Amino acid sequence: MASKTRIKTNAVQHPVPQTREEAVAAIAAIGTNQRERDRIQAAMNDELAAVRERYEAEAKPFADEIGALTKGVHLYCEAHRHELTRDGKVKSHTFASGEVKWRLRPPSVVLRGGDAVLDALKSLKLDRFIRVKEEVNKEAILAEPEAAAGVRGITIRQTEDFVVQPWDTQLEEVA
Image 1 (cartoon, one colour):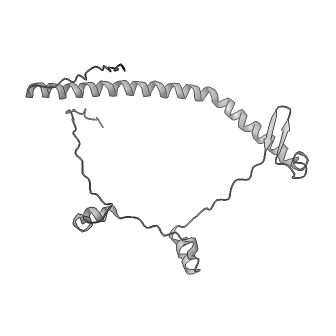
Image 2 (image 1 turned 180 degrees about the horizontal axis):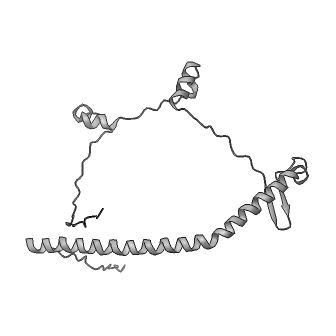
Image 3 (image 1 turned 30 degrees about the vertical axis):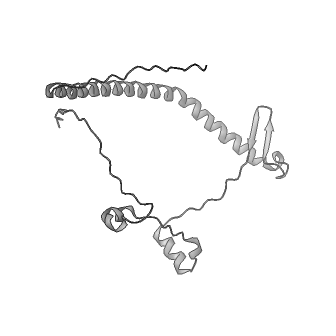
């Protein structure tokens, strides 16, 4: 006979207000807890900013030195590139303390002028370089939901959120 495994879990307990006054108190407690959480988060961010600033300041001389040394090694290697790459047969060279590499990045297209570039391509009849993207206009469907109601694959969905927003008072800023 196979034994049945029984899984036990704790029931979820949520405090449920039983009266209007208890609901008012619960919303006020939510506001208090939110403000306390925000204070803790602000304190954490202040500490993180101070720690980051301290370590960045400590690391800056090393970063500057790395940059200067890298530029110097680059200049040396460029001056001796033919020797180091065996007249261009290889793209890297190994030294006793490390390796240098020359890598050609993939080509990329840089556009300046936006619409002027499109106009120039059109005037030169280079339409093959122009992409036309068709997509469903969701805003138009929302404006005319009856017209799209019978179209298969289109569903207009609307959900409702429940939001608890405790009242907060703001301190006036002194100018």
